[in-house]
Length: 87
Image 1 (cartoon, rainbow, N blue to C red):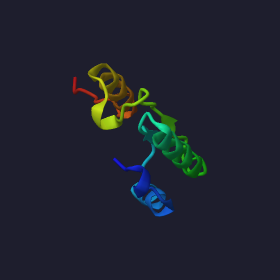
Image 2 (image 1 turned 90 degrees about the horizontal axis):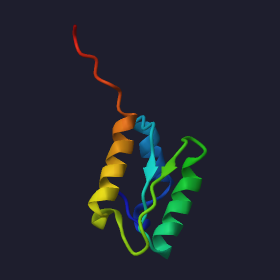
Image 3 (image 1 turned 90 degrees about the vertical axis):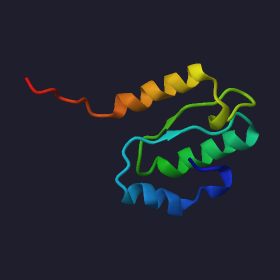
């Protein structure tokens, strides 16, 4: 989890170096958070197809309602490979 003041191109390079494939941007639901989301999205579109999960107005990822956390969790889980069970 990164904050508005922690994003730079070096961070993007870390994502590339780690082999990240599915990027979900979830900024705060205020003006600064929306600017953060826009900046990060723009910076990542060269190398990724990022998704945006918007927070409600006045909310932030650390204080999201449980129903929103469950939706986000389902999105994250959908990116995970399915487990094959032995027959």
